Image (tube, rainbow, N blue to C red; front, side):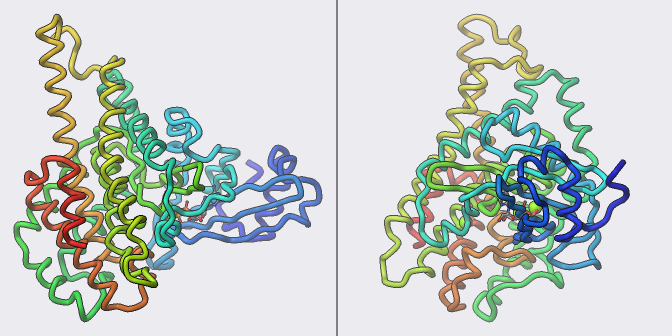
Length: 418
Ligand code: ADP
Ligand code: MG
Ligand code: MG
Ligand code: MG
């Protein structure tokens, strides 16, 4: 192996490495000394470099043996780069054009070279700026319907499905981060928790005392741990989506594993709701962002309705998996009953979706990792107002899930709180 053992490739070493891979060198152009190498990683875990030559550019992602946000005191397995590569490959097959193309992978260096997304930006940044993304609903719902349906028991044989689970089962250290940071820590005293003090001190205390909420978050945690329904992206927030006004790409599936589908669909909806509740804090004049806010809530609704429509269409068109054996639903009577069951399945998935969306919201306001939707609101009082609204809706979604019969009940409740 020409790469040898793991080492962190900073600028010069990375240039030498890429120069040694003929296909990449050809893509970038002659004269490696003239290539620009810039570290752009803004995530919590890894290094990302953009490398540009006179012919083209690439993005290079390398896992660190620890959590970047915290440092060497929090080790994290390099194998996450393997799972990210595997997930991107699978997602690229199932949802062509909606993830970056893969160009090179080095297992020992925990390093992946991929298509440079340019001029794409992280969607969360666009949402903070108040930008509408007309392609987003169609692309994200295609991504989710295709990746979730085709890795589920509705589409796979039992053997294929279990092989898939096994291929990702080793990614448990990344799952554990989610289990702790999303499903446990915000509800207890944890050193790494933080919130907009002093305004949210009372709410933080109430969360630690709220047994109905503790039951609800624990049920969701169990579902996350014990329901390998489909291959999840596992970290599908608006910071894992890159966009232009015409294109969308999903990046960063290092948390991929077989889990409950509602965890991915809920992540998208939670992050849109947070963009909505943060929006007022980014106004320069009152009401300035009303049109954007209306678009965000409409997008929340369509993300669910379009996802459900596409998922059901896939199911109706070709369920060759071992679940719901066709022989048990023969004839007109069977077809009618199976269609009713499909609707019931989607209703259960909807309940999971809003429960997980609530969990994702609360962790961003009281846990370790916050998001710029709220963090970039400079006035802490304004920030706390938006955060408190988001938490109020999240608590209702998690504890009174049954009161939300459809997605319009979620967007309607959000609209009332603003
Ligand atoms: P992490 O796992 O550390 O969160 P990400 O995969 O999310 O890393 O990447 C961090 C940042 O690097 C992204 O927010 C984005 O700005 C940039 N980035 C990642 N992949 C690409 C790419 N293929 N093209 C352009 N920029 C990228
Ligand atoms: Mg990321
Ligand atoms: Mg990541
Ligand atoms: Mg957002």
